[in-house]
Image (cartoon, rainbow, N blue to C red; front, side, top):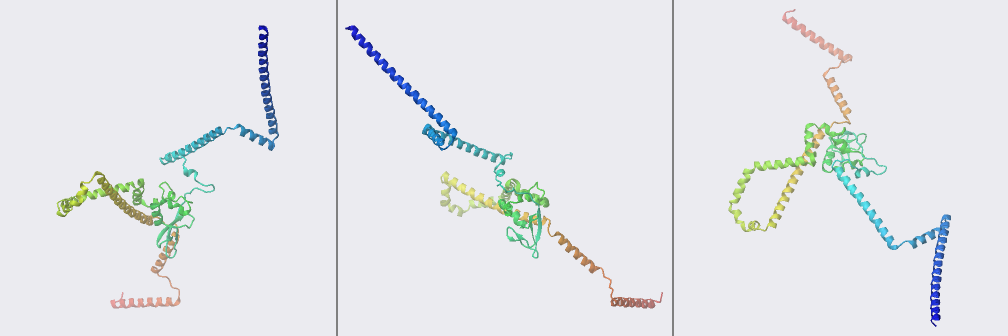
Length: 372
């Protein structure tokens, strides 16, 4: 009885083990079959890719779409955008740094070095011509259309684009950015005609007086002029200090001033912020007054510079004509002083008659004196 039950149990266990091994064998065969089929499909796809055609592109896109994870693709795009932004920021920082270093005198490439458009040329240095605009020979002006009579006009050498010397100098003092665009930025006018190291500079004819005036206007953007104005104002205050002290003392002891105590007493005992505000308003008023004074003085010096340039700049056009006129006038004067020889017969007879009369007069004188 026991042996029979033992045999049944053993058979049951053996059947269970055989069934599980069979199942595992089937699953392994199925997996290997799938693997073989995928390899076959892949090799078939490779063969079709090698052959080319529209079917290979379709299969390639389908495999890429099936293999790409949306989250990973999103992360990849975000990382690429971040790298691009960092590259742009680095280029902007290097651009700003090069501009700052170039302003400090360090030789660095700036925006001007790469701002020339294709086909355009940078402004070139050019010599100048100077002429005199008169009523008979009037010249046009780029700034005021017609130049005033008896004023000097200048133009780039070989052109007829004239501008009055006074208008050009005043424009370069007030707004120098508008000078070269008048010639369509073709010529480097400021550097050629007013540069210290230029061989075509107009300022080489002005002398010591022009050098001092130019120094006042050009030194550190007018810092020397401001310093001289401050010194002048302070010197004037020191000179008139006794008068101001007398007026201030008389105002302090006047009854009319103290009758207004209810009005200005409130300001004296006001809070500190109000006093600071009043002080700020007074400072702004003084600064604006000093700015207006500086503007008037600067305009006066610019007018002096314009008059000096009108006087010292030599003429290069029409000079020969003026010399010829002077020579002709001198020749006419010489002809008036030196008598000319007449060749007419009547003139000869008239001259001979006058000589005979002089001879007869001399003989009468000799006879009256008693002879030789």
